[in-house]
Amino acid sequence: MSVSVLTLVRGRRAHLVNLLAGLSASTRKPDELVVAYMQDVPHADLPQTDFPVRAVFVAGDEMPLAAARNRAAAGAVGEQLIFLDVDCVPSPTLVERYAETAEWPGGIRLGEVLYLPADALVGGMDFVALDRIGVRHSAKPPIAADEIRPTPNHGELWGLSFALSAADWARAGGMDERYVGYGGEETDFAARLERADVPMWWIGGARAYHQHHVVHTPAYQHFDAIIRNARLFRTTWGRWCMDYWLGHFADSGLVAWDADTITVLRRPTADEIAASRMPPETLFS
Image 1 (tube, rainbow, N blue to C red):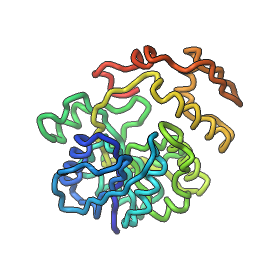
Image 2: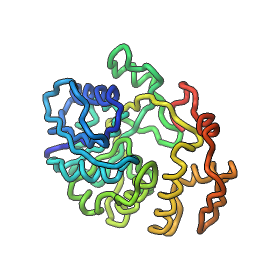
Image 3: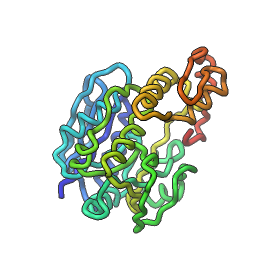
């Protein structure tokens, strides 16, 4: 069974280099890596690999995340698609575990992600050390390396690492390209998967390591996109998504938010955006 790994890139060259290194250390190499560049030109002088690396390009000043995933999937040759965020380094068994669970249990499969502190990869890629220092997100469950666990709540989907067949991707209809910028497109896709009766599973052994970058809490820098995409999701599915961020915005007096509407009272100031930048020891929001 052929396997394509797909990732989205704007900037983040060093993170992409580390992702490539992780794939090169894999017990089962992908048949290709498809890089969807949300920028005009690809990164130059990337390390050589023993699997093909192909580029597709997606225009848009804001982050066209849904469109980029659709272009990557459309250009992939694999029967199985592994979506891996450019911030993630795959463990040696990630591709193998996603590939060997393609027939059973099938469906959409989620791998665990451990968050790394800053400079965790400066001294090289030691996967034993990464397992030791990586931190699991508090909202995500621990899972044994050989475990396969059903996930009845499709809302568990996150875009850092997941796999599904190209047929199930098409069956769900891909991602809704009306979502532009940060937020909402993954939750919308989860709802599409549920509507298409594509089951979801946690897969042990498909671990990835999230490379550090600065985070903001609240996500004031994405305020406009979050409001726009939350309204689109509410119109499409009759409920809200990104409740966590909307709650922050409401508590800060930026919006009035109820069961049906969001009313913007004011936008965050430059000082508020700057103050929302977390210190380097903060691994996730």
